[in-house]
Image (cartoon, rainbow, N blue to C red; front, side):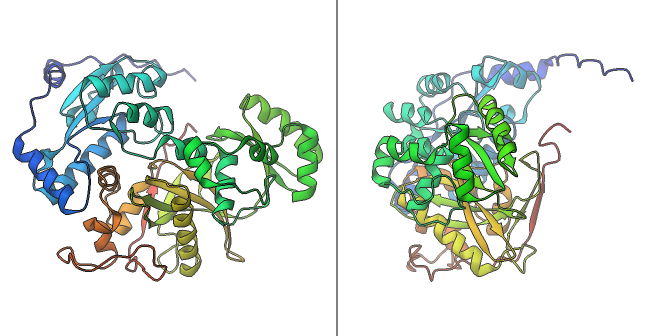
Amino acid sequence: MASALPMAPMKRTQSMNAMIDKKKKPLSPQSLAARAKMVEYVEAHGGSKPIHTILVANNGMAATKAMLSMREWAYDNLGDAKALTFVAMASGQDLDANAEFVRLADRVVEVPSGSNKNNYANVELIIDIAEREDVDAVWPGWGHASEYPELPDGLKARNIVFIGPDGGPMRALGDKIAASILAQTARVSSIPWSGDGITCDPKVVIETGAIPPDLFRKAMVTTAGECMAAAEKIGYPVMLKASEGGGGKGIRMSQNAEELKVNFVQVTNEVPGSPMFLMQLCSNARHLEVQIVGDKHGQAVALNGRDCSTQRRFQKIFEEAPPTKPSGGIARPEVFADMELKAKQLVQNIGYVGAGTVEYLYNAKNDEYFFLELNPRLQVEHPCTEGVTGVNLPATQLQVAMGIPLPSMPEVRRLYGIDEHDDTTVLDLDDPATKYREIKKHVLAARITAENP
């Protein structure tokens, strides 16, 4: 069978070049009326810092979704979709492809092509563009630089808002060992693992972005011998994981000691230098997620969640919301409500600000669930949650970044059955008895192109 011929590089048309040239010109000053609308909204809803201009440090679907969602929010709440100004980074490849996010942006800054280390994952470049373009905030999306704590740290030093969590919590949560210790500290159920029972002071983690080294070391397995000893204590089958792994790399299942010896070498080679840990295999478990958001006032909300159990090579293929009965899901509502409560406790315990996802393993036979990880960013499957809750997540991220308390956000209030014109009813998100309205929709997202076959 003849191999396919390589595609010829796209050529920009005259109209494409005209559009790109226009978007590369300096931004015109935003109208005073548009700025005033944002200031008025932020003040009316208890916020502290209006955001007018945003650098979208991403491309493709992420950048497109962010701009569409935030413009929709601006139109619905401010009466002006252009109350926000978007600056987009765009590589030569994205410009040649006439990417949709380029068309949506108010201004485009061309960045080097090639690997994302040259552009969308280049922290120094992102910070440099944010400074040069004099933006108020940076939206990172998912993938690329979204989980690099150096980005929020660097922006904070330059008084630019990062629309996401601070560097400290992000740094800690980016490590699976540290995240599991933080979960145990917040009394979230964890599956038996090499770090069973280890807890820490969350204030130290918030300040330093790390678990104290002596505690971290206790949870690790560093030699084949330590793996064998931990496995005997935990019980086979076990999963050996690299804490810095992901996307199917640095994870191996072992049924016995002989397999574990071989897998120890494989995991070590796949993610060189990464700390490793061992956990019991939870057979026939479902992968359920809770969508959480924390604000700058110590409050948190759980916006239902998703069932992401259908995976191929550890990559999600289908995502469904809600994950509960009788709306098409598998979890009993009262069990999932407890998952949501524990997710909120974890977020509040570590001072997490922004959108994130707490992932669990759930055994439907006995209703047991175990903490898996907390992803410190918005996830690609978030539209499932938007579909069942009616909460615009990129816009919620924006409002959190502007210092608006979650109970003051109109869409959050509507989710809890409070009329949008009712500004007297107090929404107490810390009260376990406070429940959002019944979910009566079911949304399925299929990402059949999530990986190569």
